[in-house]
Length: 205
Ligand SMILES: Nc1ncnc2c1ncn2[C@@H]1O[C@H](COP(=O)(O)OP(=O)(O)OP(=O)(O)O)[C@@H](O)[C@H]1O
Ligand SMILES: [Mg+2]
Picture 1 (cartoon, rainbow, N blue to C red):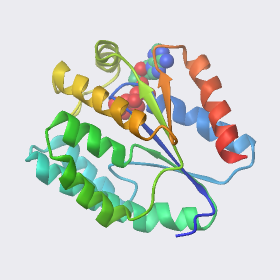
Picture 2 (spheres, protein in one colour; picture 1 turned 90 degrees about the horizontal axis):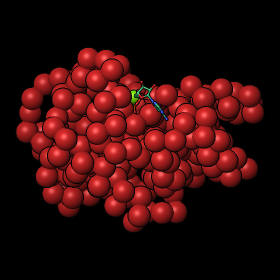
Picture 3 (cartoon, rainbow, N blue to C red; picture 1 turned 30 degrees about the vertical axis):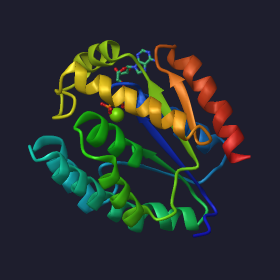
Picture 4 (spheres, rainbow, N blue to C red; picture 1 turned 90 degrees about the vertical axis):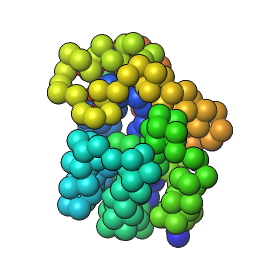
């Protein structure tokens, strides 16, 4: 597939700052006059949002969870991501497939080979051009989350679960260094925004 646009994903443990920086990215791209589409996973389509509700609140086996994530992702790619990339838009997704490796493999022990199969089936050669990983020690992310909202199924998991997710994300970043930018989420929001801006400029020039 010949994408004219750019595919940018935001990843990180719960509460690491993804949503906080989305507003900044939107404003920055608007100021540059760049056409963008902001979306999220699980979700991004009507069906995907219904699956999100189930995924975030209902108990199920880790394998079922993985397959439902990819079912939602298949819709998302087909209806939102691919068409917008083909038309030249910048598509920004709050989470994508790296989250399946981090949460379902790293956090819940689903075999990576199984995720590889679903990834190849659903995604083919589609890959993010740039992935911002918001990295934060788990104690801090859990403190931040407690202050802000009602916790979903994943956010209520124990510290060890979140530690494993963080580790897996850092391993992915190491293995795919060409597309990952690891941001230290302990830094101030302004400092992080400066780094995001630099990387966006590089990616979009
Ligand atoms: N660099 C930062 N310094 C201090 N507080 C921050 C920073 N970044 C985010 N926060 C705060 O941490 C909380 C969680 O941030 P946010 O909701 O953006 O995380 P998230 O990664 O989107 O979480 P989730 O995965 O649950 O959607 C918010 O209250 C936010 O204001
Ligand atoms: Mg968020």
